[in-house]
Each structure stands twice: as C-alpha cells, then as structure tokens.
Image (tube, rainbow, N blue to C red; front, side, top):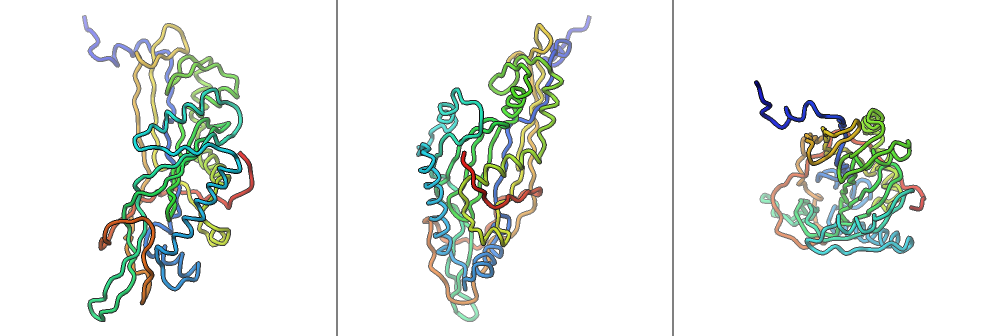
Length: 332
C-alpha cells in the first residue's frame, strides 16, 4: 500500500475549484526622457529655453504641482491624511472603503515624507581651464509623496502615488482579484469573496474567463483615465512637446489557487494551496550624470542632501510603455 507523502498529493483528488488570477499589480508612471541627465538638459534648455539646467528651475514645477493638488483636494472637499512614520496606510484606506461600492470616486488624499531619488546641481572645476561649471546628478532625499485612494467601478479599490519633486515619478496599485469581483457583480455571478481569493462561485468557468480578460490594454485604459482626472506637473506646452507621463506594468503577481471543498464551486483558502509568480519588465539603465551647461552655473536648491557623487544610475526603466494623453476635465 502506497501512502501520499505531500500535501499536494493529498489535495490532488479533492480540488473542486481552480482559478488563476492576477493578484497585485504595480504600474509605474514616469516620463522616460527625464530619467537621465542629457534628457533633463534638453527639457530645460532646448524645450523651455533656459541657458543652463539647475535644480532651481525644478522648484517652481514642484510648487505648481503641489498647488494643483491642494486645489484639487479643496474643491472636492476631500480629507487630506498626513501619514505619520510607520502608520499603516492600508488600515486608513479600509476605513474609507468600508461599505463603498458603485461608481468611480476618489475617497481621500494623503501625503507622507518618503525617501526618493531627486535631481540636484553642483559646481565643478575644470582641471584644465580652472573654470567652474554646473553638474547635474542624482541623490536621495526625503520629499513629499502624494497619495490618492479611490474606488473604480470596474477595478475596485486602488491608489495612485506621486513623488512631489522633479521628475514626478509615480505608481498605481490595484488588485486583480478586486477587478474580478467587480466584474462578477456586473455579470450577476454569485461570488463569496475572501480576503485575497474566492470562496464560493456559482460559475467557475465564467470567473476564469473574467480573470483571463484582464489585459494590459485594460490596465492602461484604467490608469490613463485616472491620471487624466488628477493634477499634473507638466504644462500644456510640455505635453504638446511630448513630455507626458508614460505607463508601464512594471510588476505583477499571479496567484494560482487550488482549493478543496465538500461541494462543486467551493474553494477554501486555508486548507487549500496556491502558488505565486512575480513578473517584472525592465530595460538597461543610462548614465545619469551630465554637465548642466557650458559655463557659469545656477545655485542648487530643493531638498537638502549630501555632497554630489561623480555618477549614479536611475531605477530600471520598463520596456513596454503607454503614453497618457493631456488632462481632460472631469469630476470624480
């Protein structure tokens, strides 16, 4: 007599529901041409017509972006939560999401001081001529990050996060299970939702089709819709010149859930098992240090930091991107 030796072998004959669904998805928001020194030089000098690039020129963009966010919050009478160090943002969001269902809505905004990579300028001396010149480099600093927690009629709960300092990179986070739950409600499919899985479902095949139908284009449309409704740091002239945020599904996690149960269509999370696959999309990085001009320099401003390093590298840039259009008017 042969006895099963693993949990998988024990469960293999008792699985009544198997669903493969995208779980957590992180969409990066960035303007690729502003992730390296020469691109930033082109933005401020060739596009905006300045003689030299300097962090002094970045400060008005930061202030304009922050003013736009505060105006958005005030006109919609949103709560602004100032997150304390170590405070659980998820717990705060759960309080606002309690009982929420239905249409699109931004529930509240938040702000927190977090470490991020920022651009600065420093003065260097040419070893041959002895002349001083400005040098653009990356450093880390504690800067404001703005959060927008919302509910989407198709995707469920989500949040969007922006760095409040140039070049204003951001992230969009949502959960594929929440997307599937919303679609099941619309289709009239009975689902018992667990914390991050399905309990009972009336039509497992239909649920799997819904999960399979979450494509990258749907994700891009969802992200672009909300970015178009929120304040942006780039002016209309910037966007007309191609300086728009671009989106990339940078990281995702797929859960493959196997659940046993006493009746067809039942999956219990705890006695079942699941496997997770995490995937990312990244491309080679570029050098991020460059001369900010040919002569003279502008004083560095912005977040305080350390002395300038000789070179640094940015975070990996995703390969598959989707441009967002210019903002359009719309209430949430």
